[in-house]
Each structure stands twice: as C-alpha cells, then as structure tokens.
Amino acid sequence: MANLYYLVAQLPSFSQTAEGGKLPITTEYFIELCSRFMKGKSLETVKNLSLEPPKEACSTGSSFLDTWYSKERNLRFALAQVRALKMRKEVKDIPITSDGEVVQAARTATGMDSPLSAEQFLNEYRLGVLDKITPLDMFSEDAVYSYGLHLMLAERMRKFNKEEGTSSYHKLYDEILGSSK
Image 1: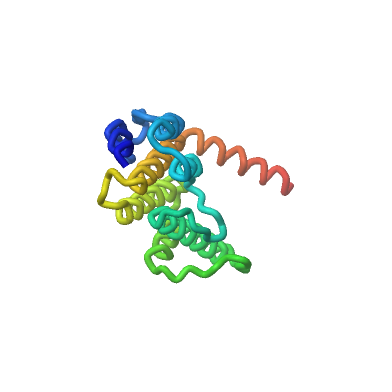
Image 2 (image 1 turned 135 degrees about the vertical axis):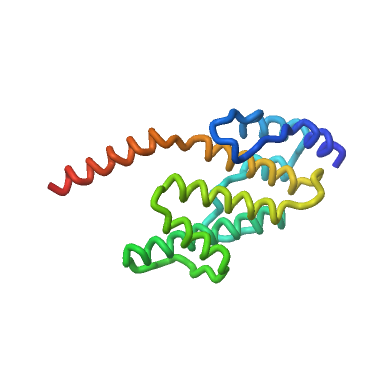
C-alpha cells in the first residue's frame, strides 16, 4: 500500500482536452513506472489496461475496471445498434443496451456530420464516465487504473489529425467509387 503513495506522487497531471499539446508521460512510461511500485496481479492488470473491453464480460478483480469495461462495452454495442438502424441493417449478435444515457450518447455521436466531432464527443463522454466512477481514494489501485485509462484516452485523441483524416477519407471514397465503375 505504501508503494502506491510513491507511485501516485510521481504521476504528473495532464489535461485530456488540450489538443496537440504534448503529454508529460506516455503509456509505456506509465507501465514502466507502475512496474517499480506494483507487483503480481495489480501490475498485470495495469499491463492489460485497454480502451477496448472484452466482448464478453469477465471479472478483472477490480470493481472499478469491471464497471468501466461494462459501460464501454454497452457504449460500443449501442453505437453498433444505432449505426445498423441508420443503415437499415439487421442487428445480429449485439446485445441490446438498456442504459438510456449510453443510447443517447450513441445517438448523438452517430448524428454528427463530422467523424472527428463524433470522436471528440465520445471522448468527452468517456472522460465523464471515468470521472464519475473513479474512486475518491487517489492512492488506491483503482485510482492508478483510472489514471492509465485517462492517459490512454488522451493519447488516442492526440493521434487524430483533421488534414490526414480528410485526405484518408477522400482516398477511400475515390477507391470505392473507382471499384464501383
């Protein structure tokens, strides 16, 4: 437990929303730092943190992570459902999400004109979910897991580039049109 105090004290704060700004720490360094202060199952859990939850629910040993993965899984299922309905496709093998907040977030995101805007909205939504479920004890293992997920979200959003995205979109669009001729 005392090691967690030393670990958390070394984790720099950062802003998830500052686009383009350099983060003071990378996920790789975060994991390396955690390996100095955490052992066993806790360290393995840090190494296995992911923004993509397993499709089937399984216990991680952390109620915080189980809640996060459940909410993220429900969001992904809701996005798939809403997208399928918009394209008038049959929804198979996707559990129906009954969480109204998640369904509304999925509807809002899929209704946006810009994929970048939708991703930014979903990122903000995910950050809000993380902030709601993060434990108050900032020196707990769950708080370390939350920091890691916040960091991964921030890194992911910094990878988006409007110009590169537009170029890639036009390239794909031209390829699709070229193959249909």
